[in-house]
Image (tube, rainbow, N blue to C red; front, side, top):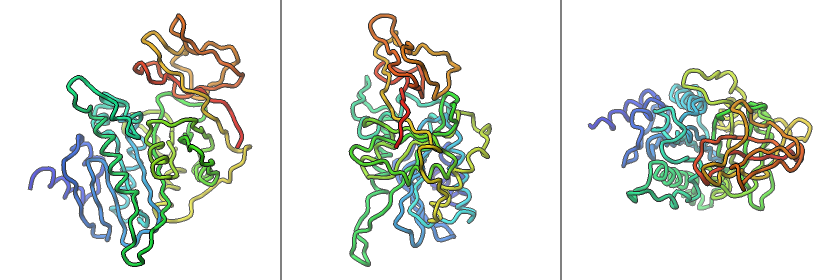
Length: 357
């Protein structure tokens, strides 16, 4: 038995998903399957990509991803605790379930990513990245593997007993934390839905999870949540849970709302909801991404500016000192994800405008 096989057997016994993933960070060329003593079947598509199948699953498919950015540790710790509780029979699984830790090598070096921002590479965008030796960067290959794994997970086949097509409900919760503090600590980013309407019942799930700030995407993107939404019509969202912190320094009590509601979905129970209305929720629409057009282009903001800071009309937000600039067009425009440390062609911030649904 080689070291990886032995480590897999140890994981099947102890359920230490985080330790197993950190140990074998860069992946394997084989998948693993096993059955647990509690009757669950498990499948490892690749390192950090784990499917859990109960004896009689409901028609719900629940994907919970974390660590797409390696230094965002709170979501990883949430997922790791869920897996351990499943192994210890403290969390019953009644749905088709997949957990993903997205970028293990970046996680092990406490970085957002190794070479490429993984959350810009989905929906096949990894195929357009070419480096000098014509080999895919780690994140490009990882995006391909994750897409294939999710395709396998979400693809529904004919029921062999009834010979009917199962019509599942697909969920995807891509858990993150932000680089900067936020005026609204927790918020949800909904991917662009093309011509589909916004689902207020889904928003109510997050309200019941103590998250009442919502961002509505305005265009296709390379994010993981857009991929699952666009490709599989999943109820998908990027869920921002606070500020980036090192392992062991997250206040796990601050995640009780979302953790409890996700566990209800896993048990196939009705979640706690907060019915949507425009008084109790803060809803923003993405107006535009501010793109870094050259090496001199930057946001004219201090490092202490928080997510959701708003500005008066006429405020100069970004400039390269010459021809390229962005000036606030309407009072109340706000910014999220401000970050000057990105390559040319990527966004240095996202401009928002408040809306009502």
